[in-house]
Structures are given as structure tokens and as C-alpha cells.
Length: 321
Length: 289
Image 1 (tube, chains in turn cyan, purple):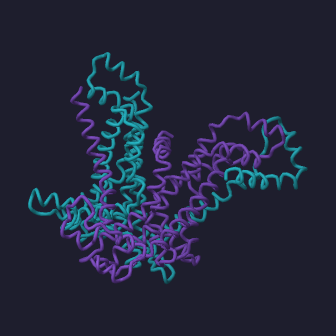
Image 2 (tube, helix red, strand yellow; image 1 turned 45 degrees about the horizontal axis):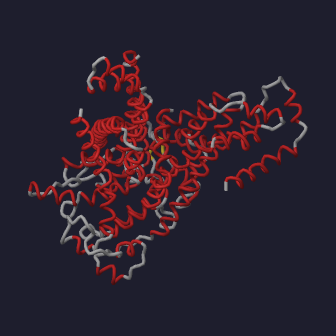
Image 3 (spheres, chains in turn green, purple; image 1 turned 180 degrees about the horizontal axis):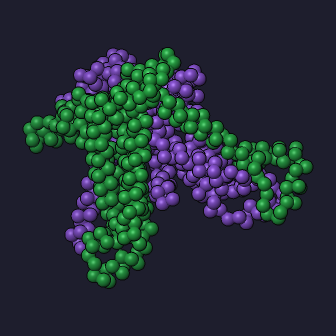
């Protein structure tokens, strides 16, 4: 199969080369090694630039514009200036969903990165085979929908296996998705379950770049395992940990599918994460202008958080070198 | 020291159990009789072993059979949804990897005015979360009349992926010049060098990207949810969610739902069996970059 692909591409290339011979010698004669590839380059980049312009830059500008309009899809948007922002500031439900999202992000990032780090270190120290690391990333391969479905079933108050065990011990089931107090922690746990293996493999790859000689030196100096972890592993791992934290914050802030399939934001808005609220505004109430304002807010929030994290990471960089 | 190892191993075993148990539980439930399951919910083996749930999920069971095992009236055309997912994820992956490779070649190996500026501008897309462009993109797809079409699902991601271009460019920058120079001296134009030399040398990272993009697209839920509400183009993720939501809450057909879930996850599990090792290594690789 590979050969046929190469053959056909070769023919494609041969086409223009034979039909337009005159410019070729001229280009080759030019100052020894530097050719001018401008027209080919633009041709090759054209699809990407098209995609960037039509499906990224234009929608982005339009999103900013729509944030300042009243827009219900069926009629053209009407410019309303700062009305949406005014609404946003006074929208208790928005601030509530922001709080829910922050709670979810903190729980899943702290727990997720913590467990991933410990798992990666354990995998590394025990010298476990690739197969085990492979099993770890199984949850990464399945969709959030499948994750939400299987855990909704396992955590079912009556028939779920987890609650069967809990009932045996404590006598009463835990309403994981059905109670105010448990909904967000449960969703965070699902998120951790789904992303832990992937993060652990990332961190593991970082651990592999640390030369073994450093640990040998540490051991000769009489450092304990814990001391070596704290003063060798952690600082050297810092760049990759920063990346893992940032990636996890970005994806957790945009959590949607596991929430939409399991709790739909309930009970009574207890797990109404921001993206769930935006979706509900746009497609439940067809208030596209306001939904755009909220996604603009989410975007600005993410930019701020990411830059703050990067700055904090950089501020502490000197002590690692 | 010995104690530390024992603790580490027990930790690892617990983590592995939590990771893998849900997959076993899907299988166990999918092979159970939905009625009988409520009599023995904590049995570790299938309750009243039956292929019924799979038959229901695949639409092979008669209504009477389904009712006898506790199937609900909710229907799911799994074969169609599977096909839709294959088309959606397959086409999108193919396009994005090919177009990213072409662009990456131009950014990595060609010399042209404005190259670095254009590259820098395209990279800004890495910073913007998808949620911000998804709503306006939905409006765009609606304006273009592409709702409920594969075109609408695929187009936004088909031509441009900042991460893919960045990733492939990094790899191509590291290729040695020698073969390329020799070909240029022999009179090969830049396109010929691209297709005959650079792309064949970049098969490994392209395969990695193909795998990662395919998995992400296959599992994507939000974008298909926005642009499709018709069964004829609805991918698996969406079909599963709709199946659950359309079932009566009180008597959910968990066995049938888990069977459908398993069928939905099966292609990913097969990919895992074939490419698991490569996947593990490529995740590490993308991280180091």
C-alpha cells in the first residue's frame, strides 16, 4: 500500500516538472544553494492558511462581535454594546457556574497530577514493562461519553457495584451523582480516572530523561529515597510538570461531555460547569449573543490563568538550574 | 527498602485494578440478563449469561425477546453510528494529517519570504481554547447550510491543525540535508523533494499524529453535538448519549447500554492492541517536544 501511494504521488510531481521545464535550469543556476521556493511554499501552505482563516480567525472575530449583540440565530444579530457584559456581571448563575468550574478544576488537577506523579515515579522505580504503561492509558482511548456511562452504572445507588459494596459496609448508598455535595467531586474523580494514565505516561517520559548517574551520586551522598525525590526528581521534572498542569487546567476548564451525559449540570445546578451553562444558553435558550459573551469570558480567563501559571513557573526556574 | 517495594507494588496493583475494572464491568454487564441482574447486582460474573444485550444493541433482537430480558423500547442503530464515526474520524484525520504535512514541509525545509511570520500567526491558534471558536463555527456551518452533513462535521478541522503542523515541522527540521541536497543537484524541484524524500522520511511521526488525531476525533462529542441532530450522520458518541437519554430513567436497559458501549469502544481497544506500544511511546514523545 505504501508503494502505491508513493507511485501516485510521484506521478503528480512528475506532471508539473515536465510541463514547465524552462524555469528549472534558471532557478538551479541561481546563487549556488539558495533556491527561491516562494510559489511552491505558498501552494503547500495554502490549505492550512485557508483553514486558519475560514474556521479559526474569522469565527474568532465573529465570536468577539457576537459577544456584543443580541442574537437568536433566526434573526440577524443586533448590536447592544455592553448590555451582555452588564448581564454577565449581574448573572448569579454565571458566577455560580464559574465557582463550580473552579472547584472541579482544582479537585481534578490537584488529585489528577498528584496521583499521576506518584504512579509515574512508582512505574519508573519498579522498572515496569511498557505493557503495564499501556494498560494505564486504556481510559484515555475511550470517549468521555463512555466514561460517564460506565461510571453512572457502577455508581448507581441501587444496582451499581460500588454502591453495593458501600451499602454492605455503611448500610446506605452514596448518591454520587444525585447529591449536591458529591456531584462535583464524583465528576472530578471520573476526570482523574480518564486522564491519569495519559499524564503518568507523560511524566514517566520526563523521568526517563533524568540520567541515572544523578541518583547514583545522591545515593553515595547518603540521600534517602524521599530526599532524592524531593531535591532531585521534582526540580528536574519541573518543566514537564508545569506542562502537564497547564494542559490539565485547560482541558478541565472546558469539561463538558462527562457532565452532560451524567448529571446535565444537576442536581439543581450543583454541577453546572461553565461550558454546560454556555451550551444551555446557546442551544437550550437560543441566546447566542450571551453565550458568545460567556465563551469570550472563558477564553480571557484561560489566557490569564495560563500566563499566570507560566509566570509562576518561570519565577521559580532559577533554583532548578 | 523491601517494605518500600511492597508498598509500591500494592499501590500499582490498586491503581491498575481501578483503571481496568470498569472495562471488565462493561463486559460483565453486557453479557447479563437485564432483569436477572437486579436480583444479584454484585455478582462478579455475568448474571444469566446471554448474548441478548448485544443482539438488542445491534438491532437483531425481536421486540418480544428484548422485552423478556428487560430491554427498553429505546433504539440505537449502532451499525449506522459506527459507520458515521468511521467516515467522520477517518476523513478528518486523513485531511488534517496530509495538509499539516504539506504545510510543515514548507515551514521546515523551504526558504521563502514571510515564512516565520506566517508560522507565528498560525501558531496563535494553539492558545485559543476550542470553545471560543465552536459557537461561531456553528453559525458559519448553519449559514453554509452544512448542518447535519459530514461536510459540516469535518471541514473546520480538515485543513488546519496548529499542533500537527508544529509537531511535524519540529521533526522535519531535524532531518539531515544530505539526501535532499543530492536530489536538488540532480534537478529535483521542491515538490519532488517533498513527496519523494521528506514525506517518506516522516512516516513515523505522521503515523503518530494519525493515531492521536483519529482517537481524539473518534471520541469527540461537543462538535458533533452542535452540528448534527439527525441519525443519518450522528457518530457513536452522540448515538450512545441519545440512547441513554431516550430510555425511561426508571427501567434503564443497562445491559443493552453496556453492550452498545462496548461495541463503541471496540475499535479503540483494537487500535490499542495493535498500536499500544507505539501509542505509549508517542505520548511520551509529544510531551518531551
